[in-house]
Amino acid sequence: QVQLVESGGGLVQAGGSLRLSCAASTLRTFSSYDMGWFRQAPGKEREFVAAISWSGGNTYYADSVKGRSTISRDNPKNTVYLQMNTLKHEDTAVYYCAARLMSISNMTIPKVYDYWGRGTQVTVSA
Image 1 (cartoon, one colour):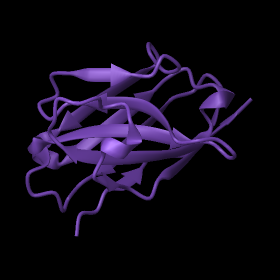
Image 2 (cartoon, one colour):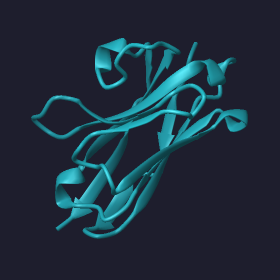
Image 3 (cartoon, helix red, strand yellow):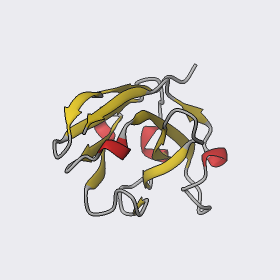
Image 4 (cartoon, one colour):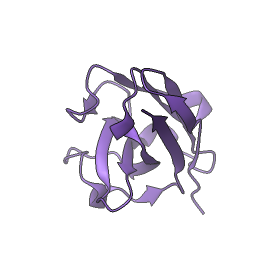
C-alpha cells in the first residue's frame, strides 16, 4: 500500500518560513512519479500549490505562492519538499502531498493524482 507522509507543518508568525517534507517510502519507483502539493483551508476547496515532474526538470506554482515557495525532490530519498518563505496568514491550511505516475497532462488538478497523504497543518499567525 502506497503511503505518503507529510511533515514539517506547524505554527509560524507571518513573514516566517517553513519547509514541508513528504516521504514516499513505499513507492518503489519514486523517480517515475510526478509529485504535487495542495492545500485546503477550512470551508474552502482543495487548491493547487506546487508540483514537480518525475525528473525534477519541470516545476509549477500557483500564483499565490510563486516567488515565495520552492518545490524540490530527492529521488534517492523518496522525498519531495516544499520550502515556503514570507508566509502570510492566508497560507494557513492543511497541506497535502500527492503522487501520480509520470504523465504529460496538467499537474495542477487534484483528480489526476493517484495517491495522497493525510496532510500537515500550517498555521500562520497574523
